[in-house]
Image (cartoon, rainbow, N blue to C red; front, top):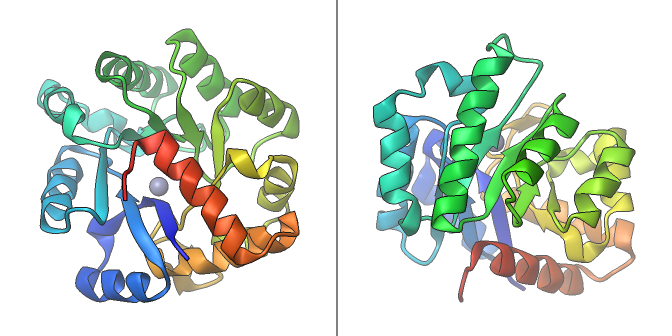
Length: 244
Ligand SMILES: [Zn+2]
């Protein structure tokens, strides 16, 4: 069985090598490591270089980091985008105390980078689901994933109709909002992820936990976990251009 953790902040793992080893044992064959700021993006590229064909980098400015989006930070992303699987984590989050207009301005610049380099996007859209969708449509970004989707089902329908994907996290085990979204999406539109090192019910996550997400989604979709892994891994390979 082959699994892909399509969204992990691996720079925040205390024992990265151990986590990679445990992930491999569980059948994880690739991890998309998402960036957030200039410092994190730099680290992500280094980590990816140390773990070729396992850690695939994505770089971007996370909405929480919008205030730190200096020219230097933006230039770094533009210069390194071609070496990445995606631009991310980018988007909007209206629960943050970061100015919304600033978030939007930075997000739009990130979408322009994605367009220029023909890269898919890994999207953070909490409490700004419609806004994020209209931004990606505006910029004519065709390929992307709304990570850990918990928004309204009407917006989800539009997201899926436009051909975007959604990703499931370990919160699938207890969050009704998240479960509902994954129930609604066709399996061809679903990716698996952990958002490592986010804590779910008090437990710090790592990429090996993507197996729990696979089990939960397989049950929802009434598929064997093996079949679910095949489909979602193929979805991830198509979106991010992974080859293994
Ligand atoms: Zn994240």
